[in-house]
Image 1: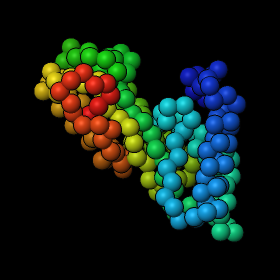
Image 2: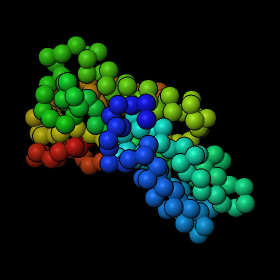
Image 3: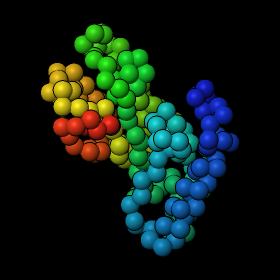
Length: 182
């Protein structure tokens, strides 16, 4: 794994164990229904930085005689998205964005989209749908009314739109401390 975050992780041998389980599940689905829509995420927490694990060599399932991951018209990729989550740790905690330059909090968000685009280019899956099935930030009523939330949403959703990354709300804004909402 080229990413140092992969070393010694729970998915072991470059994701082969986790992807082997996913491949077996997809094979069972394709044996039963070759047209059923399926979303596959990278091992771990579906972070875009591990999309290299979603590949033909790790997903050798077949269907319909000549169908495979490479030409499966009913396949998509799911990622999770909680950024920025380091410094500034805005998505996973309650730091404010206004104390820092926009480029500082925007960089880790853009990096996730860069992982998506690099995977599309390197894997020849430019047309495979990618959707963020879980994304958001730590939320409370004060944050829900903040300019930070609007700026973060505008920037993130703008990147999703311009880079053809689908998204769905994980949960709605709540007026209590509910972690990881949008």
